[in-house]
Structures are given as structure tokens and as C-alpha cells.
Length: 474
Image (cartoon, rainbow, N blue to C red; front, side):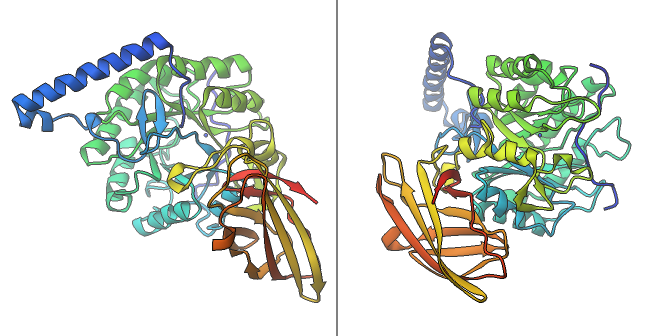
């Protein structure tokens, strides 16, 4: 298709389970199981003959630590499939926008990919800052994909840094990230090769992975494709198996970024199915929908295919693009979603209807069986009383639970009964009291509160329970 640069917009230098494969065919699955059994028996025999040999097994043979890859799928530490549904957030350029993680969670995301800098091109995000980002991800029950952005377009973008430099940055953060394997995926470098000699991507990628493993990293590692992440020359697609095999832990996931190169359904499904058929883990680490000067991405097929195949996706990006066409939220305001944001969060195969919270946080069912009724009981100058009725429309009890919604007119909750509310700007999260902690099948719980307001008191229109959208009733 020609040498297309990445179509996303960047700020000026000053200032895209995962359940990655469907069920395997029975014959291949049986073969895998027999192979694993034979290996287990062999290991037991070796252990009996020589305990030292058994203890010297490779890293990939050890018990899984946190998020990990098995048979081409991203699993949690307990073996649960985890399918990423989330967005990218430009933290390194907007470090003051700390409310953003709570906002994307309230809209149903289960993952956020956070832009960081290793100091090569932009101001370095140091250990204290990265630790705070991880803490905010965990506080908002989000899986945190951390990425170094300085590598973008290496070989074509003169200012770009190397994957080796990015690997050294991660090693400098080892003390911050150790023990966070349940919550953090390390994305070594964003789009770490441009369109110039993309075959040069393979060896530095392998070297960076090995460097992190040698330093003791046990996290799932994510690697981005060349061609500004879009792999339109197929280098990552062709070399993925050799790169995966080079990881001694076997906990490696590939990330394709889909912009205007992917403007037909055939291109999208061919690429995704190539990895699925090979049993290799993949997600759409970035993608766009709005048309640009290079073409019109087919986001509908991207999202539909990801849902059908059980692949993760992370939309670009929450807010702050120099060209705001790809801003999901206008000026970081969750109550002002763009048409792109509405598509990603509330459209067909969108985040609200397909996202499932990680079980390390409690988990939830996509398209939660719930409805919420909200009403103002009374108002007075500067204040009001509200009531929220949460109904379980499913067939099983819900316990415990977290309700999320957002005020749009600066309202604040001052007191609540039936639950405990925490609020950052307009975003509100409510956890139950002891006597409302279980919502029986077909039953309801009622929350009451008093709050402060200005001249306008618009009712919230979107509610989510455990990260999945609820219907709204009068």
C-alpha cells in the first residue's frame, strides 16, 4: 500500500484473555495435552534421578506468575481468560490528568495503556511517578499496560530512541514493578520501527525481551510491530513465531496498531486470523476510526473481529491529541464523548457491552444484568436530595458490587446512606453498605444521598455495575 506513516496524532516534542485464540481443534488440543503429559512425566523422572536437573528447568516451565500466556491466550494468575477492553492515555504529556483512569473505568474499560517516556525524547517518568500510575490503575480496578513512547518510528523518526534504551529504562523500574505481575503488562516500546528497513525490527526486539528476562522480569511482555505499528509489510507477522520462541518465559504478546492501512474487512480479518491460526497471542494495541489523509480505517470490522475471535483492543486515545479527531473525550471530560468516543464505548461490540473486569479485582459479566433508576427527591438553593435504585435483572445474586456514574454539572455528594461514595471531579464510585452488599436475582437495593449543586442539576444518564453498563430507567 506504499510507505504510510502512522496516522495517529502526537503532541509536539516540546510540550493501538487477552483471549487471543478461539478453542483449538480437538486433534491439536489432544496433541498438546499428550505432549504436556509426556513432558511432565519426563520431568518427574529427571527429578528422581537428579534433583538438581529438575530445579534447573527453564523459566517458562515454572508456575505462572500473574498475567501470563498459555496456548496463545492471555490468562490471569488463576487461569481465567482475560480480554482487554480499554483505551490509551497520554500520561507522559498530561501528568496532571490523574482523573482520567477513574473516568475510563466508569465508562466500562477493564484496561488502560499508559504512555510513558524513558527520557530519550520527552521528560522521563521516574519510579515515583510510575508507582503512582500503577497504584491509580489498581485503585480503579484496571489492568495497566505501561509503554515507552520514545521508540516511535525508529529508523525513520530521527528523534526516536532504541528498544535497548527502553529495556534499560524498564530495568531501572524493576523495584517498582516487581510483585505487580497480576496488574501490569510491560509494553517495551511503542511502534519501535518506522518504514525504513522494517526487517531490522526482529533482532532488537528479541534482544530487548531477553534483556528483561535476564534481569528477572516475570511480567507478560508486549511487543509492537514495525511500520509505525501497522506491520503493512508483514515483518512481525512472518517473524512472530521466532520472536515468541526467543522468550524463555513464553509470556509474550504481540500488538498490532490498526489505522488507515486497515481500511477493508479482508485486510483486518486476514491479519488477525493469521495469529489466531498460528496459536500466537495478539491484541489490537491501538486503533482509530475517523478518516484521515491516508484513508478511512474500518473500525467496525476491527471491533467485531476482535469480539468474535476473543482478542483484546485498546482504542487511541482518551484525550489530548494535537489533532482532536482521535480524542475519545473532549478536553478529558467524560461527559463530552466525541462521536469516536461514543462509538468505542457505547457502539456495537464496544467497551460497555463487552468488557469484563479482571478477576483479580472481583470480575464482572459483560453487559451486566442490571438497571438503574435515578431521581431527585427534593431541591433547595445550593443542594438537593437524590435516590438511586439498582436492580439485578439477572438470574444470580450480585455481591459485592461497585456502581459508577458521572455528574456533568459539578454536583457533589455530601452524604450517602445504603453505600459509601468516593468522588473525583464528576466521576462517582459507590460501594455497598453491609446491608446492601448483595443484590438478589430480580431484587433491588436503594441508595439515598444529599448533595451540593449549582444552578443546573442534570441527572446522570450512564451507570455501570462492576465495569459493565446498566440500562437506565425512569
